[in-house]
Picture 1 (cartoon, one colour):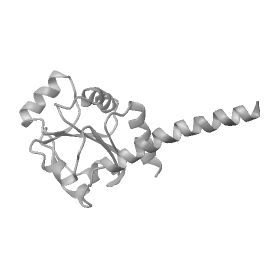
Picture 2 (tube, one colour):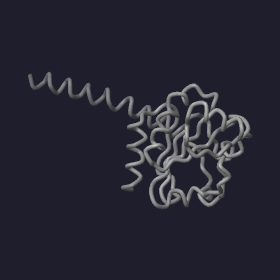
Picture 3 (cartoon, rainbow, N blue to C red):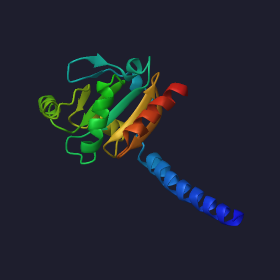
Picture 4 (cartoon, one colour):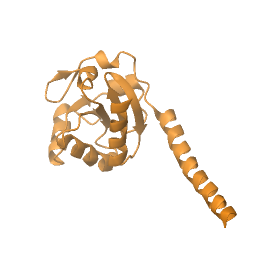
Amino acid sequence: MVNQLRHWLRKSVILLVLPVSAILLMDAWRAPQIPSDFSRVAVQTLDGESVTLASLSEERPLLLYIWASWCGVCRFTTPEVAALSDRGENVMTIAYRSGSSDEVSRKLALRRNRFPVINDADGTISRLWRIRVTPTFVVISKGRVISTTSGWTSSWGIKLRLWWATIV
């Protein structure tokens, strides 16, 4: 009985370690190459507000969500990010090659999304940061990148990353 229990425990550990390792490797491979001075550069939101990511992340961790209106996976993750923003979480988003500011505003209004957006209409920010995949999630605390991930992630995954940023 003890041998059988060890056997199943070993198999369970292997079945857990393999997917987690694959996820971590994919995140490392697809991670954006964010310039060291990114947090001090002022960017403008659709509302016309000029902000820096350092100032936004000074008090509490900031979730920076890079998305695109044409991204299939973003259709699933954007409502989760919008819900976090509605609940008062610190969220800033970047619309990657999703059209003019007016077009992005109309698309957001259509879907009733009310979160702050930086429009990267020509892909300048994404090119500078070497964003390869949408959606991409970047957690920033006190102007420092704490974690990045791309592709689909659950709301619990996002919350866990934001929580982690408060203790590191």
